[in-house]
Structures are given as C-alpha cells and as structure tokens.
Image (tube, rainbow, N blue to C red):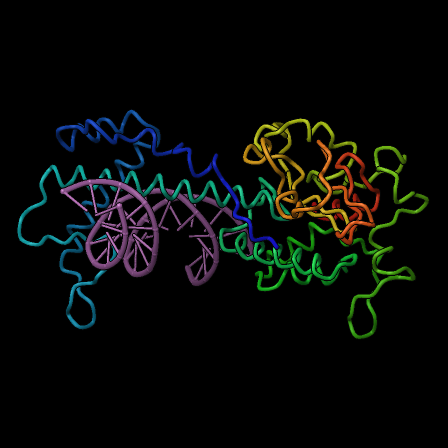
Length: 334
DNA sequence: TAGGCCATCTGGTCCT
DNA sequence: AGGACCAGATGGCCTA
C-alpha cells in the first residue's frame, strides 16, 4: 500500500530556474560571466552576493577552529597556494548556478508536496520541515485508515496528522479543521467529547441534510464566510475547479487553500485537483487502489468500489459529493 | 531583539 | 574532469 513511486515530471524534468544560467559557451572571463548574469533575473542580488562573498572570503582566510585547524566547510575560500584563476571562478559560478537550480527544483517538489497535504495555503505556507512532517503523518493516517477498513475516527486522524508537528503548525491544522465548537464538548478532564451524536455524526452530518446529497444540491451550504480559504474536494461549488486540470491555473483568483486531498467518511479523494502529473494517466488513489482484479474504475470517476467489492469504503464518483464529506473537507480550511 | 526560516555560497565527497 | 549531492556557514527577512 502506498508504495508506488510518485512521479513529478513537471518538477523534476523541467529545469525552470537553471535554464537561464549559461551551461555552454561560457564567457571568457568572470566579468563577462557577471555581465551575462546581469541579463538574467536576480542578477543584481547575485552580483552583490558575489561581491560580499569575495569580501568575506578575504576576511575569513585566517579562520581556524578550536584546534587551530581550518574549518572543513562553509563559505570560506581555501587559497591553497596558487591564486584562483578566472577559469576556476567561472567554474565556481557555474557550480553555484547549478546548485541554485537544484535547490529550486527541490523547492518546487516541496511546493507540489504542500499542495497535496492538508491545509495548503498560498498565503500561509507550511515550512519545509513541517511540510515533510505533515506529509509523513498524512500518509500514515491514510494508511491506517485503509488498514482499519472502517470509517476513520476524525480525532484519531487529526491526532495522527499532528504528531510531531510544531505548535504553530498544529494550531494551523486545527484551524484548518475548523472543529466546530458546537460539535464538541470538553469534559471535566479536558478531554474532547462530542455532544450527543457520535463523533462521526457530529462532524459529518448536517441538520436536515441527506448525507448522500451533494452539498450543491441540498440547499445547505457550508459556512465558508468565516475563513478565506477555499473548500475543496467535493462540493458542487468546486466543480469549476475540477475542470481546470492544473493546480496552478485552477484558481487564478483564489489566494487561499487549494487542495488538501482529504476526505474522511469513506470517500478518499486523495486528489481533488488534477495536477499535470496525473491528469494524463492515473490518479493518486487509482494508483493505490486499482489493484489487479479490481473493478475497473469508470472514466472520470474518483473511485467507485461497491460495498461488495474488496475495498471497505464506498468510493464515489468525484462529482457525487457528500454533504458530510464537505463538512470534513471544509474543516480543513481555516 | 532573539529566534525561525530561507536562499545562497561554498568546499568536500561520490559517481560517471 | 566534471556534475550531482550534501552539509556547513552566512546574511536577509519576518514575527513574536
């Protein structure tokens, strides 16, 4: 389960940032190199940094550690005998450019990861480390849910999600969850409990709503007024969102949450927006769930496995949204 | 102002 | 030899 490798062709195979840097036909001199850099973006900053770097290197030439030995790493130029030639400077600049490009690719991949874990927001980005932690927890939580073969417990799910996260990130996730106070009571021990209903019902049901009725058709709507983030994953209101296959272009005017692929109540919309990576082929979940022998998924469907099937959940065509699902998904937008 | 986060530079190491 | 990868060092920016 969840072992198939992800593919990130748009991220890893597209040297978006490094393309501007000269790889061939290098300038004869460093001055030409810098002149070339000046034509590309951020050139001023880099040039300034180069100057600073050169200056600092000169100042740090005598740096030694506690044992009087030169430090092994760091932006300290080792002038071992022969002076640095223009050629070596150019090569160093090349290496710097490649390193920048590499790091940009890494950051792109990280950004794509941010978009598929809960609580994605363009305005309040998770840090790198928190993104990785949350992603790990998310995978773990989903795996646990699948293994359990029953409807996931929201609190357990959230607890798993928040394991090891910093307090701010935990707060963010909690905020994204919008754990509606009316659905919770706190007992005398400070433990969270639900008011009258089962935890599931408390979180997933709407008064007077049919759980099988898509939000867009039920008349009841999620209260999205309080939070600027976009609800995701199921609502009919998001159908236009689905129509755009690109997560980048899918919400050009929305500066909020885009895609936490999170559904609890047996509906695993592991991906709500179809990224370029997957739009051509299989879906996240399809990769994970379409085991050999399993009923073929209908075109344009998220998942649909009958109760008679091996998969323990009712999986639904993406457009067949559940009100309860919306409740949960909505809770991931703060 | 301290601390967190980040981008960048840099030298070392490994691999082709 | 050269590129990829890694990690230390550094400074800038932002926030509590």
